[in-house]
Length: 271
Image 1 (cartoon, rainbow, N blue to C red):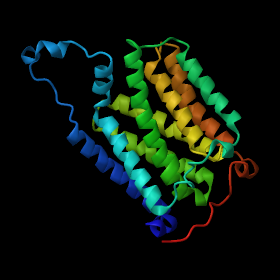
Image 2 (image 1 turned 45 degrees about the horizontal axis):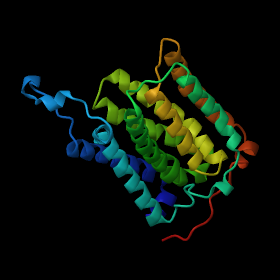
Image 3 (image 1 turned 90 degrees about the vertical axis):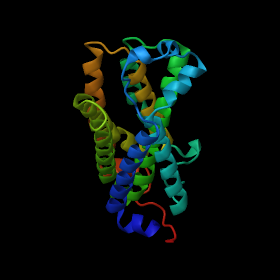
């Protein structure tokens, strides 16, 4: 497996993405979203929304959460099998670099939240955070962990572009077959463009943890923010064109790229 990933990095990355499509179908089959045929036949309890822990468990029980949990297990299993867990960016905080670069994405998150919060209580916020955390951790583990380590020997810029494209294609394939096209296009744009910033932060900070942090904070902010006629276009502009521009700026020349980590990953024994 390590030989395949090392000598055929693009083929390996595409294969992993195709496996993720399969896991998406499995998750939908295990946790289907069954439509209600006749609401008159529903019991009275069905019209009473759950509260507290019941609300959290109800919201967590979804095909999306199951999918990202399965994707996390897949990525972790491959990283352990190949022996790339540390090279994927799971290191100590003392080894992180350039944390000042997180400031701009955090400012974007603050702007998104400036219009107010949407939520029905603490349980709603907790469930939203847990759902976001499972999804962002799984996405970063796959694309800025496993596939990043696979593609980065050809250079961080190429790794940023390819991982962003693959993550965008995955989201497009999953959402276009399970929802309206406008929503699919919106989520695909946010995923693809955001990948430029997350990938650049992955390289410049020499760790996957800052990318996971920023992605989680951003996704959580979007999920709980009250986006109005001004904040919504601003959010879309900053998180698409802005994130692409910021990611490319962080990798703007060889000298700056060298500041982010070794030009080549440490040599490892082929299994």
